[in-house]
Image 1 (cartoon, rainbow, N blue to C red):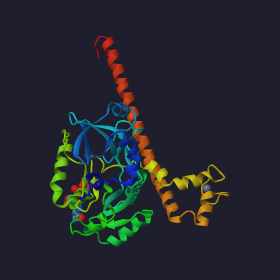
Image 2 (image 1 turned 180 degrees about the vertical axis):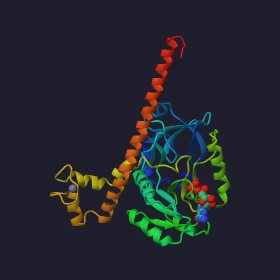
Image 3 (image 1 turned 120 degrees about the horizontal axis):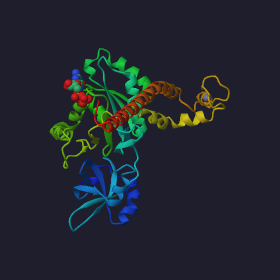
Length: 361
Ligand code: GDP
Ligand code: ZN
């Protein structure tokens, strides 16, 4: 018997267990494969269906996050009119978030249940370790496994040397070299993602993400081009998948906006990725412990006992410095926005006064 649709999309025993109450309610398991302004596209064992949120979920979505691409959901199917309604979202294993563009405070979920985040950077002159660290922090924050991908190795005079520099900051994440031009390293990349697992590519513009996506998709490349075109123009697209099955059985999640995810968000990534270190720091005798020579320092004790990996600690410190700079930048952006709001209000106020004076200037 061939594998069921949801099995191809990564359905597991663990999910079946979480789904049991929904099965009892007569609901059907499905995975969100696309999210559009006018609804969702979901994959079920009955095929792909368009689905909408139930009234309750729609209401909750005002406060909490609505389902995202990659989510597993419980569907109610109406046999009379064939309508599919998303009644519940199963607990997420991982989430990739970003700050809403309009409100600096709020984190939006942009993809759920990702297994592997490829942090993509190109090996030409502007290989930027600090930027890779920030993307890595966002990847760690998601809960997925980060893999650093250094592209365009054909353009580098010393690919191994450059890679070694990145290995030193990757804190154990694999670092892989690829050249799409020469067709090198692509298989090793895909070998990081098991059948049914989901990967995403993040990284700055121009580093070679689309080229990799096309290489992954092989002959399906025209499909992804079609997705791009439609979404970039903001048209209603209801039939294109953003979660696609790759020839080897792995899944690729590629929504508009996901690729540039994760610079300012990196700070939360820090604290989640380094939970253990934060916890240790909480055990230091002094609240303002510098974790170098202070008496009663839990970090130094853990380093001495081998409980804390020195490379990990070094990476945490390095990221900490870099992130302080990112934070200051976020702060500046917030302040600039606030200044903008005040200026707008002052303008309105002046306009009102002008009106009261009878329009004289
Ligand atoms: P994206 O913005 O990250 O999606 O980057 P693209 O995939 O559009 O690639 C940007 C440019 O880099 C394009 O001109 C590609 O042809 C080029 N490029 C991508 N991969 C390679 C590679 O392995 N070697 C070389 N030399 N160029 C590449
Ligand atoms: Zn300490």
